[in-house]
Length: 456
Ligand code: BES
Ligand code: MN
Ligand code: MN
Image (cartoon, rainbow, N blue to C red):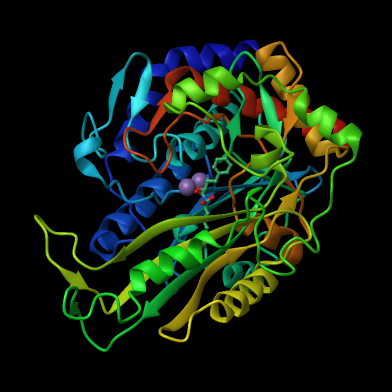
């Protein structure tokens, strides 16, 4: 719409500057050292909601980091959109690999570089600015509520409690989330599913103290050797996961579904080159898009033990640890898979060591409908802003809270993400293209407009 374009054009620089201000706040939820910064970021988000035209906005304390809630209600008869996003970010480590400070945002080659630029401050803030565009041009077509949390990157453990206790306040028709990716700006897409997650920590303990690796080596089980062997045994030669029962509930896609999934534009060579690898790797019998979008996985996220300082120390360590995550697909339950993992991992431990398995946070997989009014509104919004119909895809990442929106609030979600897979989220040099930021702000008002039009 003309008025939106004009308002956006007249305020472009400010919209960018405001995002950069938000990116300067190191709201790392995982590290308690940043607790005050996380709180400061929540305040900044609240203020931005009020400035954008929310009638009220508040900080909702939780047992962990606060949730920011805001709303602009114009007419109870109109549909209500609940926008969910997160203002917390992943730790920036390893710092030495950043070309500029993770919390000193810079714009280079039309890309915004900072931790959180894409995940999720940049994407979440598009909704704040889209609200401003609609409110200030008197064109808001529906009610909008915002729930922006500060614990997504640490598992959203307090958000479920917040949902349970605020069902009335959070009443809406649809949840709208921008925290996923598109194929590219030339091939706009909408993710229609997310994988679940089961995250475990394991410890293997051998002798009661670190030993001289010459005096005892060869006679006592080395916990690191043992852990490495146990981990290696979790995949077979076809890269299938060997945990008994792991695949029991996994549904195979129909040939038609597979064909549709694989018809999405994807260049294997470009993918490999961009990652600096000679060959992709994964479960035999599946394409790369199927492997990330439809198949469960098991990956070691970190492993430690023994001596890792400078030089060489001859030591047979007393213990070894690893963090292991499993991505889950529809019908798998994080609780069931965690239990299967624990039972299996304990069962393969040789007698010479003691193994402890501790489950961390989990989350359930989701599939979002493609035949709903809200999905159609999102598809039409993309068609209007990009001049192309979106391609439905399945995302490989996880947003555990999406399953809870359905279970606790009875609400479906639309995943209207504008990130790119190479935005380096969770990695050094995270970026978000300036183009994507403004394209998002341009697209979102159309979603609200079409949702309101199609709902009556
Ligand atoms: N925004 C991501 C999830 C994501 C990224 C979905 C790209 C689809 C495409 C989210 O912030 C995230 O990182 N989630 C975590 C899980 C969480 C429990 C820490 C993840 O997927 O590892
Ligand atoms: Mn995110
Ligand atoms: Mn993330």
